[in-house]
Image (cartoon, helix red, strand yellow):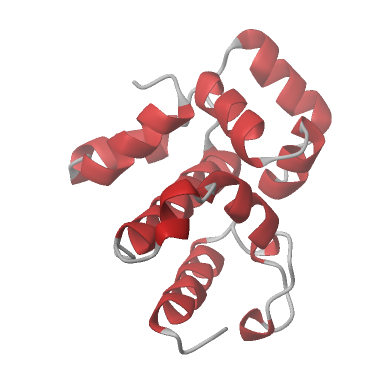
Amino acid sequence: MCSSANSFRALLRTAPLTERVRIEREGVPYQVVKGLIDDVFESSADFQVFVRIPKATFTKKMRDKALFGGTPGQSVVGLMELINKVEDMLAAETDNPEARNFDVQKWVGEWIQRPQPALGGLAPAELMDTPSGRASVMRVLGAIQSGAYQ
């Protein structure tokens, strides 16, 4: 399994169904979580709130180099997919010079914290721990891309 956050995101882009199911069942490697914290979040405490994991559980998983499964793992996979979607949106902006140097991970880390009217005033981070919430967040992002929602 991939150890860096970027390698893991690349894996998610191309993984066949059986590989994705395996990842979802087994969990996300701690190295991926560490990379995600470094790239997207201000602190590990922000990550813990995002994935709804108690500090003691987070600390134990990191110390034991354990997989992050269940809801925390699903939240990580969802966030990786969100980052991939924003990267894809920017890749489609071939005539926009700002798209080349855009820090996708930083932007996503900030955007998921901002309340969105299209999500009933909730921040995307408040919804990423459930399949329905992740699907709604992806729909809003798609609407932003199409220009239907600013």
